[in-house]
Amino acid sequence: MMKLSPISEAEAARYMGVKGVPNENVRALLDRYEPIVREKLCPAYVFRTADVSVTDGGVRLSCVDELFTGEDIRRHLSGCGRAVLLAATVSAEADKLIRSTAVTDMAAALAVDCLCSAAVEQVCDRAEKEIFAEIEAPFRTWRFSPGYGDLPIQLQRGILFALNAQRRIGLTVTESSLLVPSKSVTAIIGISDALLSAQTERGCEGCNMYGRCAFSESGGCGR
Image (cartoon, rainbow, N blue to C red):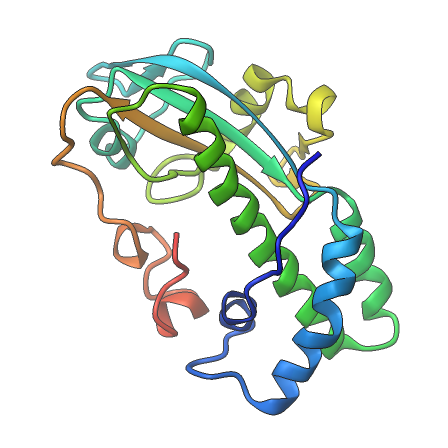
């Protein structure tokens, strides 16, 4: 079972909308709740590889029935013959902890929420390291998630089905394509035998929410 390392205070503070160095009150909240969050969460991930074929209509992954549409995913997987599908979560304990904290202290609940978000990123980063220590990938892209750029968020359902994620890590999706538990991620990572040169830049500029969310105003979400 994966255990979380100390959760990045800087990452959590950035999710809170803090620009620059967190003040004393924010640091106190994060210091108080970081060990609680780390103790409660139960991180897990699943993955599988798929063959990639780029068509005029979009990108086809061999283990997913749906076609991945949009120019961003076509560009992102250009030159990739394979891809890794990844689903990661820090468990329903995150949602429970956020709700229970909000009953008495909304500021603390925000800190917990953002610590949980930072924890998911940690899990994804560690998952990548473990996955690519196991499988051969001369060159690879960064993680690209449904809902990012012009890739429809509705594709999360097909990814979860391909990964059997509900049975394996308890991860499901609502009718409106939101992941449950909420502190979870699905992503596609392209694999190529040759150096990749035509990828979408990682950051706010590649997202269809650029200029319309708090992260783009505070320097980016770090995706």
